[in-house]
Image: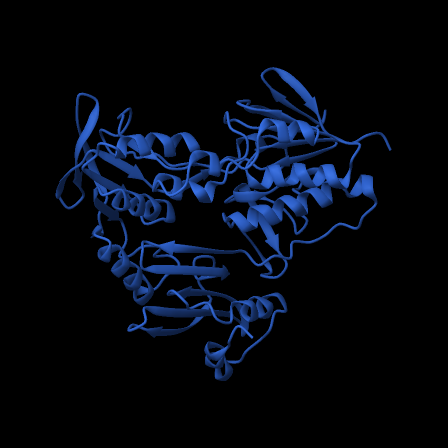
Length: 414
């Protein structure tokens, strides 16, 4: 077989991991990696610590140009792919066609902008997704006295956490009744709200921005949907993502909430794969399609996509997705949250067993689907015992009738 040609669109963790694994699996291949930012791979989960000035910019960068050259990866920085030509098996970027034998689309998503009057073009209204966003917000925080975070998402939380950690008076507007309202119940939400208040954050529930009031091009105050006015020096927006799926138009690739793939991360078009935040992948453990925008999921996707893209050259059997998606995070200075598997955010027929210890600030929710244990949320410092056992139960599709479910709260790390 002639040397294989691989093209990867997107140099995030999924795309760069795929490129690295392809080089190991198929040493004679050619790899072209397109990036629409001017940066090599950087650690997106390190952007909040960078914004809090807990790490340096150099610590966030994970790869450099020399690394790509050493591994024979043709990195095209600041280059946007405009089209996928399925019939010719090429992508088009800057008017130039690049042929592929296997293609990975790992384009992620772009942050949704604020749409209330006064937001467009304001110099101090920021999204928080990229390195450049982080550096711009950090510069603004050097002189800011008051800042507002908007949204009930993890991005909005990270903004509020960074603002208050930098000594800025912080207001957090949440449209719903609590943070992460689609995943967390009232009891879990309150534990996290207590952590926010303990750090000095002013919480505003059931609020959105009705108007951004500007002076000399910058927002000086916001007016909320209930008529409250908050003076501010900057506004951070965390209103979710729009998945970058435009390359799929007219290709035969199915899209829904993301780019639809099978359990091998291959789309409906043979030879075209999707990974990371952009992929609505089939999880044979959960037995359903969904999107999961976590760092560990992106890395697992990159490895799996590389193996299956290279299978035609290596003769290896194709593999299925076999990772339980998970994430963990410190929430302000006094709380932690760990989530793995499915939650009510993904299905409305999930049944929940909940246990809470308010004195310790601990909360556990265990999720079941037709008696099968499918996921959990653990809140509280030191409240992670049994995590490995829980993950194993999800992977083995263990079943627990209602009479046995609460016994899972007693599981230990053993």
